[in-house]
Length: 228
Image (cartoon, rainbow, N blue to C red; front, side, top):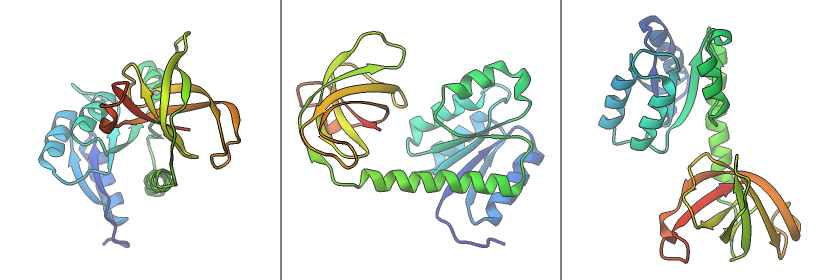
């Protein structure tokens, strides 16, 4: 029986039925609503049938036909709100898994795990999401400033313009497409204090969190929110 009523919906994916059933039992007892799937294709079918949000995908990485990384990317095309927790075991002989984890912003839990460790990991994800939502609700100042930016791996700086700024990040007018999750360096001169950020020239590191369609009518075609 559930000990706590929660509103979060989880999609659990593993090609081993025993592990899938165990995860569902563990998380249901913590009050979460769960859907289960034994493969990536089944998980996408579940996701496409759900009009309501799926708050978290908990998926094994190494599965037949469709691996967890591919599943996460496909699911977020249908449910962009979904966060991800990856699972896997025996990483020492899984170079492709290690390389994939190095390039994803999402957390990871090593198999085998306990009910306690799984529950703590899931709670931590939702607590971090709530904190991030609180940061985005902080006051924003509409201000257009020139900004130099450089995406991870690039050698040349590009020029863009801020649309608004807060302590947690900025909305950027960029002349080129930027991918969600992409790491980015920013250089700009602040005319006044923004939270902990003092006036003057500043260089900061962030990542692209989302695209903003409402700025398409501005000078540049791409609007992205960059979180510090």
